[in-house]
Image 1 (cartoon, rainbow, N blue to C red):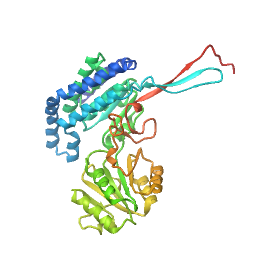
Image 2: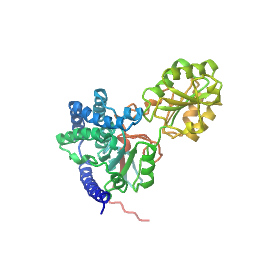
Image 3: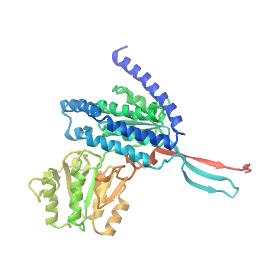
Image 4: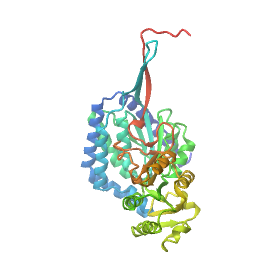
Length: 428
């Protein structure tokens, strides 16, 4: 047996143990009280803040490795933690604690003519497996959301963020102990062996009920191809902004700049700007100039190239590229219907926006664009569970089954039907 076979065998044993621990924890969490879960969440937040220095030191180890490997600036931005970001992570847990507990809520009820009484009641899913790459904050966001919704979770971070994620997970485990809940409720896979991902995709002998991938196209494609259990897919964020001929430049231009430049490395960052050809030339010129002057590289079609000699030529691949960088592709289109067609062809069904003062045009766009999130006159960077009032999110689901858009507490639940009778029997 060679070393890789020995490592894979050991990983299999470790992963099976993690799965069994999660199964036990999930049974306890399913009936845990709201008070107990909230105590854990608030304790986690406090411990995270108290451990800021330790977490930042761990994060430096990851950052040093990332710099040595020459990883991109956008990747490093997603990886980096500082006091402010740790405070934001802790604040997210506090917000989750304040949310209504979804478990046990009656979503609907009715009575049949035979006096049978029906209720549809929210329940936990069970154990959620989350596979993610460079964002250490996912450790806390995912753990907190799964706990609030009564689920155990198994987290597998990327090797680039392993020290940061371990430091955060230790804080979460301490918070669970304080509340009297199993510290195995939120587990982090301890190995960077890639075979651990395969074990999770096979479900750990039935221990994992759902897999959520959060990362690049290659990761999501692998998960969708190999998973033997349900997947909440989070695909690329090829987000569009359509600038309509009736857009108001004073309010619309800041939306474009914010959508692209606030944080270029997040999935809600705009990657393509579509401009109505009837938009006045001087307005188009201001848009392009402002983007470039803000530090953004513009890649445009022939019409856009003629506006500013600093524009680079966009090729066919640019329309389907998630840059995650200070780059945007810009295309001139013949009205809202052509914009909608372009988004349908090149978009990822993540987040798309229209800028216009025409209600009719806006409603057409919002109705016909088949994306998880559609916006009117607002930045695409609002594609975030926290901004939706969900406290946090595990990701933006771009599929159409069960969960779509920000995956928060409610999206991490299932339901069962409770039927109450008084001796009824079925005769036919």
